Figure 1: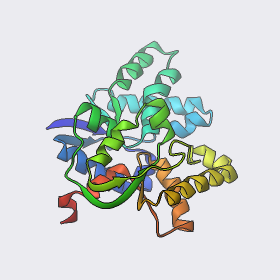
Figure 2: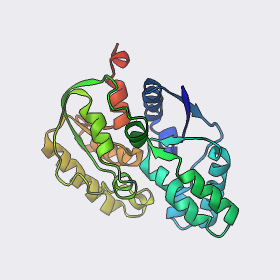
Figure 3: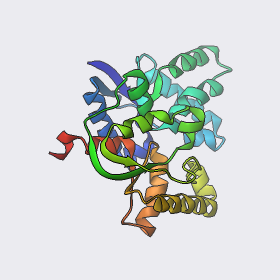
Figure 4: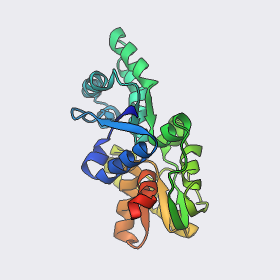
Length: 246
């Protein structure tokens, strides 16, 4: 098996550990040996977005020290992957040695669906689901990483799953990390719109590929529409694999 380092975001580590477990399941099914560095911490995205560049720089250097020699680094979060791929070189541009290390590492960091579909060329994990699903396009995945077809290919390979369109599927759900905290009223209005579009689609499950979006949308659903479900794509595929159900 080829070894792949797992970059697990804080949101997954603290609130959504099942996503990491599902990621391990999918990587192993795809013929990859997942490795977890115990010393990993926050990638620094909250600090960077809040303007605390010195603190973000410390997190970046720690990340580079920890993952810098790994051949491939995979994360179930596009926003955290973006921090490493795009913001680390920006943060360290005035330090030539660190800038070089950050730039070189950036080329080896992938979001999970991107790695599975584009690199490993694996789409079918033997999963099946009888029902309708729809998909939320997360901002960082779509606009920074250009990821849209990859998760849809994974969904299309799930036997029995009927993909239905959702109005404004590429509109932000209102999370945006610190945005949801600093502009709570606006964030709630945005996630309400997202959920209304999900309900109108008549899908049984709303799928997405970003843990932050799942916290926001899933939290709103649990309060307002507890009978409806949102899931990270990795969890949806892994939990509907034959072995997972037996």
